[in-house]
Each structure stands twice: as structure tokens, then as C-alpha cells.
Image (cartoon, rainbow, N blue to C red; front, side, top):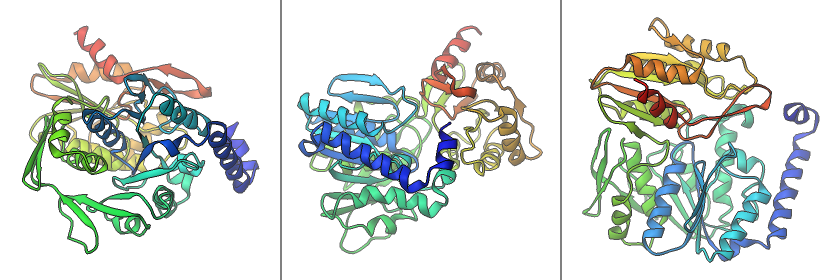
Amino acid sequence: MKRIIRKIIPRFLISCYHFSLAFLGAVLYRFPSRKLKVIGITGTNGKTTVADLATRILEEAGIKVASVSSIRFKIGEEERINKLKMTMPGRLKLQRFLRKAVKKNCQYAVLEVTSEGILQHRHRFIYFDVAVFTNLTPEHIENHGSFDNYKKAKGELFRALNGKGLSIINLDDKNADYFLGFPAGKKIGYGIDFKERENIETIRASETDANSKKISFSVNNFNFNLQLPGRFNIYNALASIVSSKGISFETCQKAFDKINNVPGRMEEVISEPFRVFVDYAHTTDALLNVYSSLPKKTRKICVLGSCGGTRDKWKRPEIGKIAARFCDEIILTNEDPYDEDPNQIISQIESGIGNKKSIRVLDRREAIKKALTLARPGDIVIITGKGSEPWMCVARGKKIAWDDRKIAKEEFSKK
């Protein structure tokens, strides 16, 4: 029904409707963001981890924080799972959340800001103090019409700074200059391999080390260690440190010392006799980062699929190519098919796998069970696409209660 409405009603009218709701929400809840320091985080990958790490750093510093991410809604010590199947809540819900944060005496709000949320003006009438850019690779192209439009949507978060506040940019991303082009009160760049730029403060990670268990790096001769795997998490850690500017490195490290995982983000759910990871990776870049963070010589059994609902069909063969490159055993299964034919989605992934053998198991629980059955001591099973999401979305708008982590543990216990 929603798709039919979108086709019938002109885009500008739909945009006006969303804008009006954003204004209504802000008025109804009395512009709550004015009484908070708001950190907005955008990019294709890493938003959730950066939001989680930044929240933990601020809390370690004794600051009361509210945060919104694809994982959870958090106000101080009160926390609940995000069951919306939507990273960024609707306009009224978001403004209500911020008003509640004010009532609970929060000083900061940390928000994941998505391109689709920006298209629907969910960021409007929120006064951002800090905007963070993680990285940019193709995603949601069907909704935006082109990669350039997708990039422009992300840029709206930085435009919302109105030339004030703090702009934080991953300088190792090839789109960094676009985001640096937006005026801000101050700009800070971070990364590992970037070339120095004039008129911008930079924070560089050196002495970097990353494996499938932890990362370590140095900033200005201060050593950081974090029990999160993969080089990509060095970037996430850097972004969280910079977004919490004014808080000492010592406090940041104290926060990191208490972190064992970010739910559903390269989360190791089984360690013996083989290792099982669950990760949210559903983009080509994220999948590449996840697979390349695992030991090269270790046998890998990969469970994966691709989202339905006609979303980003172009990436399905690309996902297949990446799986064929890194995985020893490939099990293709349902992810969130919505109203698309699951077999057709899997066939499109298979077209990228080529001559390498793969196994098709539509039932996701059975696919996870199959992977665990194939695993031998010392192997790695990596289940991607859903992370800690609490639902699987299938035909006719039906939602099935789900959690890859729970399913993996349940099936393992039966072995």
C-alpha cells in the first residue's frame, strides 16, 4: 500500500507531509534538543558502534546520556531494545524521546542519523552540536535515485549545523572533502592513512594492530586497547573519542576497558570448539570488512542473504563475489525477504558466486544449524545480515520474532 501511495502522490507533497510532522513534533514537545548537546552520527557503516562507544565514554565521564541507535533506546540507566525495524524513529517519537531525555536531566543525546530518516525530515528541528561522518559506500540507491543523491542526503546532517558546532570527518574516506565543504564552528578530521590538510585539526591513529579478537592503536603517544575485532573498529573508536571531545584519553580508555562487545556487531557468541560470530553487515563494504578481519588461514563457514523489498538489488551479485572470495563454505538463506520471492533473491546472490559451490537453505534457523553441523574444531562460522535485530520481515507485512545470536546458541546446545 505504501509503495502504491508513493507512486500516486508527487514526491514534493510527501516531503511536505514529513516536514510538517517534524515541525508538529518539535512544537508539541517544545523543541527539546535546545536543552541538550546533540551528537548526530551518519555514514553507511559504523554508526551504531560509534554511537555505543561515544555513549559509554560520556557515561564514564559522569555525564547523563540519552542515545538512539538501531540496537536500543537509552535514557540514563533506562534502556530498551529498538524493535521498530527502523534505526531512526519517526518525527513525533524522536521528539518525544528527546523531551523525555530532558525531563530525566540528560545532558547529551547521541543519535544515529540515516539517509532515509533525512529524506523524511526526521532530523529537522533538532539542534545538532556535533555531526560525525564515518564512511560512505553505495546503499539505498533505489530510494535515493543515485549515489550522489545518497551522499547529498547524508550531507544534510552537516548542513544542519548551520555553520556552528563541531564537524568530525573520516579523512581516509574518499568522500571526506564533500563533507568538509559544509561550514562548521570547528572541524576535526580523523583516520590512519590520510594526508595532512591545512586549517583543520586532525587526530591520527598510529601503531595500529587489529585481529579477530581486539584492536590497539596510539594517538599522540597514548595507547588504546579495545576488545572489538577488525581494523574498521579502529575508525569507530577514533570517531567516538573525537565526538566526546573535552574528555580525557584516560577516561576514554576506562570506558573501553568495560566493553566486551557491541550487540550484533562482530559479536562472538560461541568460542569453543569453533568460533561463531554474528554481525549486522549487509552492505558490500561492511561484508568485506567483516570477512577480511578474520584469520586468513582459518576455515570459514558463512551464512548470508540479502534484504528483499526490492532494496539495492545491484549489490546481491556483489555480495556473492565477496563470499566466494573469502568463504570456504557458503550457505545462502533468507534475511528479510519482505514481499520478494526469497529464491529469486538467493539466485541473484548465486550469480556473483560463480562456479564456487554454495548451499541454499531458505529456513534461516536451518541454515544456521547447517553451518554449525559443518563446523570443525578451530573453524569460524560467521552469520551476517541481521546482527541483533529482533525481527525477520516476510510477506504481507508479517514479522517473525528473531535473534541470530539466540538461534545460534540454541542450535549449538542441541549438538
